[in-house]
Image (cartoon, rainbow, N blue to C red; front, side, top):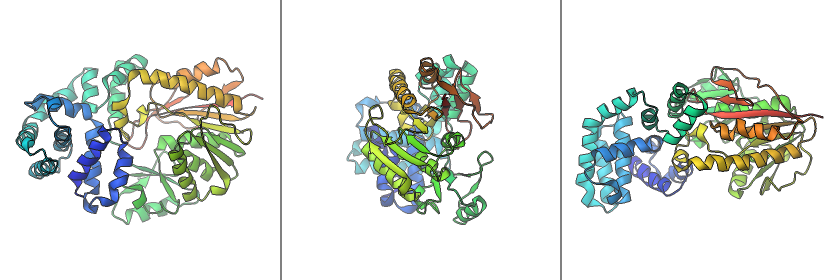
Length: 439
């Protein structure tokens, strides 16, 4: 499968509800090796600023997009994104590839329209984009950087308009892969090994066990992945698990919403004496987490349960709990862009209701003297500080513990927890609140 064809196919799946990373993973081996990078780049640049491409399409298309077949609209969206973002891509090659895809889809009658729109965008869109980028209006900044307008407006209420603009630009930033090194892996030697493949990597100045890359390579292709030497993980996520481990030195750990087991694996790696029990509602995610723990060679110390964290019962009273709750994912929109277009403002409030129940449940299960880490990859106070404040108001036995990392992009929450802003391509938006239960 060629790159443009694959990008269009996956984009169509995402429009029907698929997750981009999973859809890409399913067909990765079917894509010509030389086209895999192009496929991923086109897919994610289309998703990242989807509303901007729609606006450009409406501006330069002589027919209403809703009157066009969906395959034609998808081809135009991918083509517009490619013209604007892939500076190195020859316009005739891009247009010819899109036209061929239209032919293959059976919509040959739209070839002339597609050709005309893409050439017009190439000739005329630069001025429109420049006006948006230089605009002082928050709504224009949100459109340019690919952030839902309602989210930008909410941040302007919670922060300030200048800070909201800064956050919008940060959320719209292109993300790159960072790698967590497992215990005992020499970072300098790993960077040498990684660089020998012709790719660029360097040591994170912020985390001593992290390596930063200048791209987004497929994890399975990375040296050391199969052996459990490394794990792709944002530095913000690494900080969260590290924070819990720095207070809870071992014992019985409960990961209440383990997802695919990334932080479960990190805890197992950096807490070799801990016994970990991991839960998730999704059997599919539990299976992925089991694989992650097998890859990390920690099966003997980690057990799993599938079910509702509000009703499951731990095998042992936990000494520490990691509660990485389901959330809007707004801090990771640069990495998982399809999520922001599926989220509605009212979903934030719905999330907070569940988050409060989960935190209440965690507080009730934690042994006195134990530690509880509440975390999200959200940048909304409704899912962060307000959840923690609500639960702590009813639990005087809970005491907030200080965060152990400092940086310009790490700020104290209002009033509880710590917010990590997505100031760098390797740092996603994140929130943590470490709580201790008085004896």
